[in-house]
Length: 178
Image 1 (cartoon, rainbow, N blue to C red):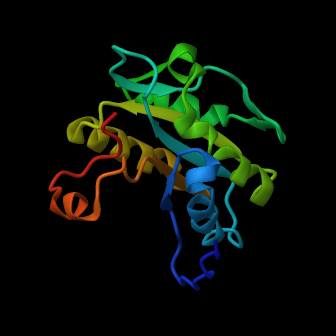
Image 2: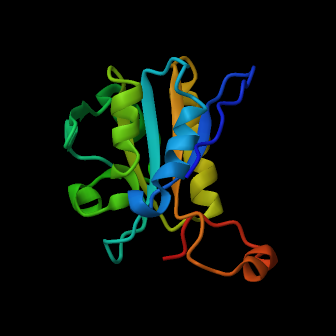
């Protein structure tokens, strides 16, 4: 598969959407997304994932660990951003259980480790993708990140195999309907 060309984007990029299916299915699309930001400077990546594995969880879970380990090594959690979010957002909790088996965040991390080896991450699981919950969190997140070189990575399924016709007919905006 041919990779997408890098596009010169003259504005500051603060967010992107990247798929979180297995690399065999969406790795090239994820790599193409990160290619668009690879020559920029970021200190922290806030990775917004969805809950596929912890039934009954509702809210926003921030990672309850100091670093995230991949085969490429450990990447540290930005404890300053995490602490600010916990202090300012009543919807946020720290839960190791919600993150333990969740793949929507972990698929993004090796791209960050390779392209931004000194960066920190803030893994966030949001469930359900409720517009009011997301709006409250988004306002607080914007304030916390205001003076930081940060990129928000929205980890998405993008599609769960609907055909082209059904995809075009969908009216709702959703991150993941698992």
